[in-house]
Length: 142
Image (cartoon, rainbow, N blue to C red; front, side):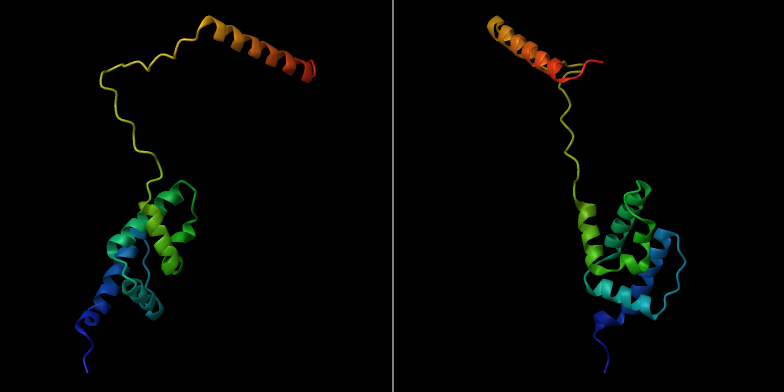
């Protein structure tokens, strides 16, 4: 009995993705049975070579910024499928706000603050003066 056609290419796919991992990380690891099994499970879980590229690039960036340990790139750590999936999703998250749109004219000044009427200015000045006096009483003199 022959295996289904989709499983006939597994050995080639496993070898290709292992070679890609070695290229991406600069390692030269032999493809022994245990590693074949890990890669087989990786592919069966639906992950792809592009996913591997993305996660390795993400981890390398995090390692350079000293937010991750170099051990994150070890094959035995990388191919823990739950963690790989989490790293893949984190690598896709947009962690910063989108950039603000540029001003329409060069050198545009930010809007000036709203004017304060004299009565409001006097009230705020008095509150500030009282606050400073309270602070001066609480702090020991130098």
